[in-house]
Amino acid sequence: MKTDWKKVLEKESGNKYVIPRSFREDMRVPGIIFIGDGLIGTLYDDEAPAQVVNVATLPGIVSASIALPDIHYGYGFPIGGVAAMRLDDGVISPGGVGFDINCGVRLLRTSLKRDEVVPKAGSLCSNLFALIPCGVGSKGDIRITERETRQVLEEGAGWAVRNGNGWEEDTTFCEENGAMRGADAGAVSARAVERGRPQLGTLGSGNHFIEVQYVDEVYDAAAAGALGFEEDSVAVMIHSGSRGLGAQVCQDYIGAMKTAAKKYGIDLPDGQLACAPVESPEGRRYFGAMAAAANYAWANRQCLAHLARQAFVRTFKAESKKLGMTQVYDVAHNIAKIEEHEVGGRKMKLCVHRKGATRAFPPNHPDVPAGYAAVGQPALVPGDMGRASYVLRGTPAAMKETFGSICHGAGRLKSRSAAKRELSSQKIVRELEDRGIRIRAADMKVITEEAPEAYKDVSLVVESCTGAGIAAPVLRLRPMAVIKG
Amino acid sequence: MTGDAWDMFEVLDHTADVGILVRADTLDEFFAEAARGMFSILHERTAEGEAVVHEIRLDAQDMETLLVNWLSELLFLFESRNFVPREFRFSALEPELLEATCVGTAVELPAPGTEIKAVTHHMLRVEYTSDGWEARIYFDL
Image 1 (cartoon, rainbow over the protein chains, first blue to last red):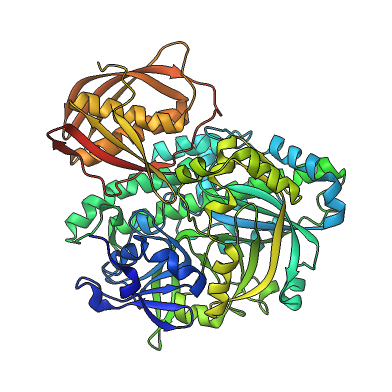
Image 2 (cartoon, helix red, strand yellow; image 1 turned 45 degrees about the horizontal axis):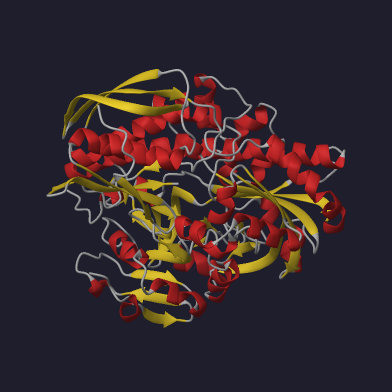
């Protein structure tokens, strides 16, 4: 039976809605969804709120099962969800991280201005497309052995830098400095390693992309300045993850966790929520494997950033250092982390699952790079290929409300097949070109599946977060050149 | 060995991903058809070329897990060996055990298709109805 969510969702304040614990008797905490008036309607006949409720039943969950404005229907956990569990009696779930472990976003700045790039956007787009392997079954030019793959799993982005794919300082401006503590390469299966070996430095397909963008609006000049941006600055945004390796880790551990959940007597409303106690041998092993896959993803985005720099070098016939292509930041949006948070006036360590949610820590947080202490952690929010992307920054309110998390993107509105039925790729390419956006894709079909119309308006998603106070806007970026897998 | 009918599965909508509804009279056809359904999404070209054979042996705690493991194994062979199957022979197929010989080709990649990251357990239930075996299988893209 379908639930009428309009009747269930209680508006607590501006952009904050609550599903009370009384809604279903197995809920341990309420569900909280941060969403603005312009988007709430998309939830009324969607089943994503039911997934928020299911997550609220998991053992050891603290405060609330939280969803952000880009919430949409996922597997087990909704996309755009945050769930923090106590370490002593809580669980860790591969479904709360997702298949693409450490899918995330990296942003590079350039010293170029929009009018310098516009005349060369076509050749820049071609060079990016030529250098960056993308599409179904694509393999990278980086050849690594099984042993080297296991090193990647332990060392993350640092491995890629050490092997000539970037600059020392890149890892400074990266969540976890590009290598998560607690990674256990030994917990990653041979299958996962075999899937990952040929894919290092590949973009993938679907919603993954590389975009050349320009700053079209600055909301906070001081913060933008600290990140090295002003109006018309050109940037490069990279969206990709841990490829087949991460998917295999998730697949392997969902199977193991189904068995573990039975063993520990955990009742699950949905098999995709399979989990084990955080401190159990199964839980620790998954955490070690997940952290290793996360490190692979950071190495992957590091290699992609290196290829993007080379494309600029080819196009502008200048060294990438001369082009000012330093790294702004790199965030994970599918991950579980052990973090310290204040709950009910008490500091406690928690296992925070972010599935389609971006960490956004406030100014002066110890995990924010020293250079950004006054600004707070840059939170990178990609939009669809036609509209815009945003750089936001963390606020103290996010620490209180969402365990320091905000939205991760626009969030899908239309299914891929609906988009393919209703839209034409040629028309989309034409419309984008009319607006000065060049696009290259490995498969034209992806252009319809990823059409702007298939997504929520990212601006409404971002406004839902800033309106709720959990993020502060820094600047908006518009696409100029788009590479899709 | 199953026939080459391609109409025993249909593609299902999911907000961010895609699924297939598979129906077949026998369990052999059902597993073969689930594989064909997955490859119809993954690889849109006809797989022609020298025959390659892969033997697969799997056990699982239940039929749903066996089905997920079967498709995951084929996905692994596609990603790591470029393998696209044409034909399946099952020497054992029970709710908890599968032994199959898969005949197909190693294709050129990248090729048009939709990348599947994983086979999910989302709402998965393998049922035997008056119309035969049936399941809805969702893929993470």
